[in-house]
Length: 273
Ligand code: 13P
Ligand code: ZN
View (cartoon, rainbow, N blue to C red):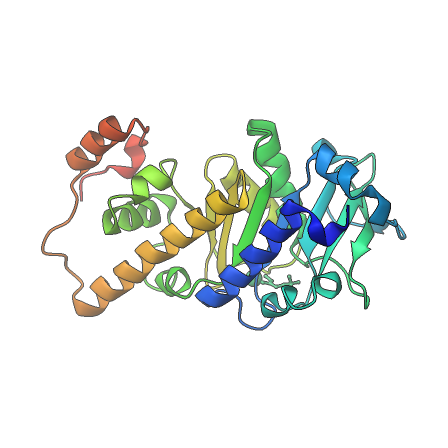
């Protein structure tokens, strides 16, 4: 099968277009990674031609010998659907999980996203917790970023404030959302901090930069990212009208919601204000 005919590749490309249309990917902003299933690798094998090994810049032994579909560094999400082969690539990791090689794509040169260490460290953490996790997505959502200038950079505050903005939020991200203070992006250090948050959450915010989401498939991961950003948009509107809400969802109401929807909401987010 041709790489471009594979369903996982079509789903990946659709997600880059959807993210672009949402306004989360100005210029080359954002990146996407998919941990490819063995049978999906097998199906496109005839088109895979491994290049030279290169350093990842991080060590992810639990992902050794696996294949990933990734966006390219400096590539624009808006161009992916027009010319996938030039803007995305399939990479393979070595048996230590320390080097990668390009097997398909990046036709005109280039390398995987500069956030590859973060993506792979997040995928490694998630795989250990639940092997069904395959997608890690990073974008620059306007309202989430705006909130990192006005809310305290605490997991408890961001989670609670976003939960209050839409009844579905605690059901969609019951474990909450992690927040990382400003750091230099594009390397191992920020990847380590992000993957620590991914031990507990499926969402991690990078202050004054953007957000990461992890999930089992493209729909769940995009939907998660979208839901958090929508809640942030409502909060930005509310805070633009008034610093004080007249009414909101109360801790006991969240507890009732948790019961009705059979989700567990950690008590640390249900503090009295
Ligand atoms: P890349 O173009 O290297 O993927 O970087 C974009 C980005 O959002 C960095 O955080
Ligand atoms: Zn970014």
